[in-house]
Structure formats: structure tokens, C-alpha cells
Amino acid sequence: MTQTVKCISPIDGSIYAERPLLSEAAAIEAAARARAAQPAWAARPLAERIALVRAAVAEVGKTTDRMALELAHQMGRPVRYGGEFGGFNERASYMADIAESALAPLVIEDSNTFLRKIEREPCGVVFVVAPWNYPYMTAINTVAPALIAGNSVVLKHAAQTLLVGERMAEAFHAAGIPENVFQNVFLSHDTTSALIAGRAFNLVNFTGSVGGGQAMERAAAGTFTAVSTELGGKDPGYVRADADVQAAADTLIDGAMFNSGQCCCGIERIYVHESVYDDFLAKCVAIVNGYTLGNPLAPETTIGPMANVRFADEVRAQIAEALADGATAHIETFAEDDGGTYLSPQILTNVTHDMRVMRDESFGPVVGIMPVKDDEEAIALMNDSDFGLTASIWTQDTKAADAIGKRLQTGTVFMNRCDYLDPALCWTGCKDTGRGAGLSVLGFHGLTRPKSYHLKKA
Image (cartoon, rainbow, N blue to C red; front, side, top):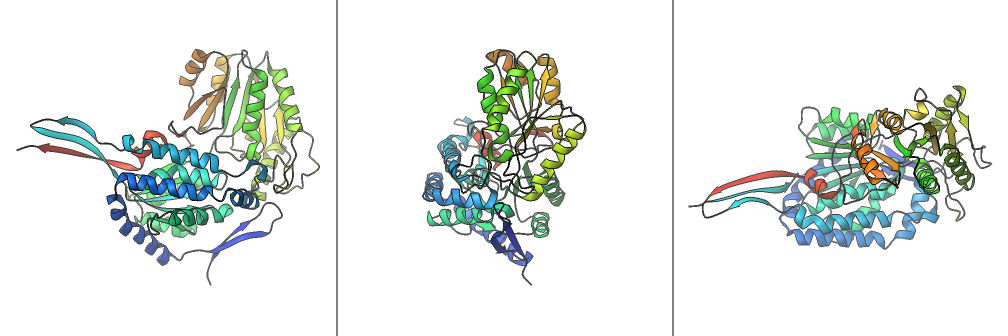
């Protein structure tokens, strides 16, 4: 009997999409086709590969209305936000723009005696395991530069967003990228592990849970297959005494609640200088009370359901535990909260780092807010986490933000903004958030290997 993978829509619990899983033998054949197709793809001129990726991105852009509708059905994001093509296009276009310089040889010497240089060669076959929360944008972070650099790509998407990989494959093939150079596959966890352990890929790029990342590393153990990971997060915001309090509240709460809090770099903890704490809290509560929870297909909905009931259950459990331990809830339960995927957003105070809601990844519409007396206390609390993806500092003092940032254990430091991925900067993390370098010049370096030439001229 053929095994299948199902996407259960968070809108109503119905099966929105179902696809057969590849058998291990069929999956091995798919990876072999990707490997066989890669040398010819890498031999094409760089300018041609860039042009084809740009054309593929443009193909995706022709279906943005469908994208928004399908994402609402698959993972619950309201249609009013229009899908993900803006970020998808921004990231792919930037990587295309810098490809020539990023992949250019580093010439050490070109004299009458020697040619000494370092060139970048594609890794080979890149396996991209993409998450459901921003399924187009997270996938393109690696897919675009990997293809541009001359790799073939095998994409496996999360069960919650089954259609995304198919849509990307349709667009990329329509643009002229060979079918074996870019493949979308549906695989079980066991088959995925078997392929990695069998050296089917040269590089694995995984975005997902800490447990998932550990499984990838275990599968790759001893194979010398490179594994790049972006895993959990518990990203903090810090509002200093000199901050624009309204701007901080508007942006940090959006960073905590947008996409029902299901953002890799979403804000999950906020520390506020005691002198502006009451003002900041009042503004945050007012913002959240203005949200409309509901069906993501309705144009008036500003916050939709969580992608899966088990995700909502975890957030409810963290909130309940915190309240039992003395936390204060500031948001009344919304009428639309059904105890399932439709979950009321929540702001908690009187929280401590002994509570899971301030320690474990929530990945939902809840944020804890704590007062602090100074920068030292804020830095200590921000670093008191197993994760390190981004941190957001709110201040008018750039020098202070820079100094604080140097002491934070994080991959990205923001000042007066949050929850944004700048494709010109390296997307990376530390601690249990994982390792690797996405986007920017370093993203190309992570998808290629250095090769040195030491040529003595006659």
C-alpha cells in the first residue's frame, strides 16, 4: 500500500491536499538523476543560470493571488497579506544581482611566473528541507543561490505546505530549468534519513525544529555531508528608556503576533526599561485588542488560525503553566477562539525565566514582557536562552545599540526594527538555533567549495 502525506487545513480540519510518498528506491533514483544532471548545469555560463532563475521567479510572480489563497488553506495566513512574493522576489533578485562578484575567483597572483587563485565550485546536489511557516521565502533563500552557483537541487517541503514545492517546480520548469536539476519530492522521515546516510546529497539545508536538525545531523554522521541548519528561536526585544515607545510597541507586537506568531525570527520575549514599561505595556495591549481573529479567507481577518492544532495546544499549555505560576494575562479570550487552531493572542507579565513561555520556543501568538532596570540586566536576560537567531534593540543611540549588540549571543542584531530578513546580510544563528550561512555573499560560499590553483608558468 502506498504511503501518503496529508495537509490538514487549519481552517476547518479537512484534508486540503494529499500526495504519495516516494519509495526509498524511487527516492534514490531521483537523487541519482539530480547528480547526473548537475555537471551539465554547472557547465552552463553563469549569466545563463542567473537569467533562468530570474525567469523562474517571474513565473512564480504570475500566480500571487493563487499563492495567497493556497497559503491560507494550507497554513492559515490571512489572504489580506497577499502571499509571499515580495520577499521571495527580493531575496532571489538580490542573490542574482551579486552572483557574479560573489562567485568570482580570488586571484592571489597573476604574473609571468605564477597564476595562483581560489575558485568557487558548486557542492553538487543540494537537498533543501523547507518549513511551512514562510514556505516560499524560506525555500528560495537556498534554492535560488544554489541553482545560480551550479548545483542541482532536491526540495522537500513540510507536510503542512504540500503544494508549495509543486508550484515552485512548475514555475522553474516552465522557465527552462531542467526537471532533473530542480526536483520537488515527497519523502518520509525514514527515507530522508536513508538518503542522507547514503550520501545522496553533498549538502543538506534544513529549516525546522531542533529535533529535526538533530535527526539530520545524526543521519549525516560519518558521511562528511555538510549540514546547514536554522532551528528554534526565542528572539528578544529590548526597549531602552530613550526609545520611541509607540514605534517599539507597534513593531515588536507585530513581530510577536504576525502570522499567528509563527515566524522564525518572531519576537517571543520583550524586556522594557522600567521608566517606560507601563506606557509600553498599555500600548501593546491596545494593539492586540484591535486584532480580528477569524477565517483567513475573510478580508477583515488580521490574525488567522495556527497551522495545526498541536501547535496551538503547545502555546495554550505554555500560557496555562505560566498563569499557574503567577503570570498575569492581559488579553481576554477572543470569541472566535475555538480551543483548536483558532487561538487568542496573549500578552503575559509577571513572567520569569523559570517559565517555559520565556524559555521554550512558543512559535505562536504569545509574548512575555518584563521590566528591567538597565542595559546590564537586559543583556543578561536576552542571553539567558538556548537559542540565538535575532535580537531587537529599541533606542535613539546607535553607539549604545552597537555596544549592546556586540555582547549579545545572536545571529542578527536589529535596531528599531525586527522580524525581517535582509538578503544583503548573512542569515545565521548560534547555540540551538543551528549553524550555517544563508543569503549574502556568505550564502554563496556556503553552497560552494573553494578550489585552489597554483599554476607555474613555463
